[in-house]
Length: 181
View 1 (cartoon, one colour):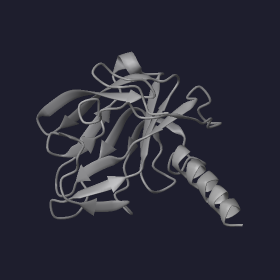
View 2 (view 1 turned 90 degrees about the horizontal axis):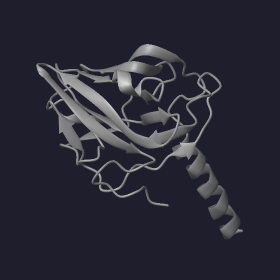
View 3 (view 1 turned 90 degrees about the vertical axis):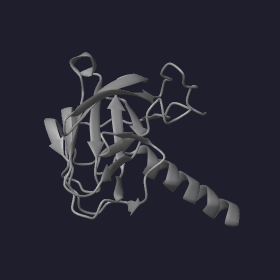
View 4 (view 1 turned 120 degrees about the vertical axis):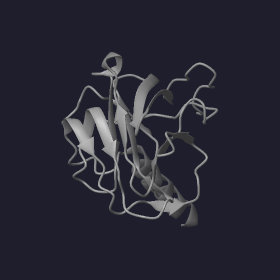
């Protein structure tokens, strides 16, 4: 009985972590905006790569292994067959960030973060912040849907700052190890 219950719990957890937040109603849009309501957690500076002192992501510089992907098909976006779950961390206060899918990645990756079913899935740009609060970090679930596992390039724009970052979505970026099995 205990073994059976443990198996059921493991299957439920596997499904819950493989599906993007709000996946049943997400639709692709050129730009999506984060709803600051209901972050997963909040706290001190994260162990992720911080860009422009405003946003933090698990990138090839902050993560030794590439992020695992799970096969997932959304009827609204059937070409994006894989999902790499990765949180978005945002500093609260007056700042904001734009996570841009460069032209070279368009049609290969879409972005989605948030804890609600109306955030949308960005095909070109994801806008995060400003979110109310006093200079702390808040975390949102979501990640990257990709057509094939690859090293994704993104541009993060904050006030007066733009930086390219790379994210191993199912495949290692240079300097990373492959995702764990």
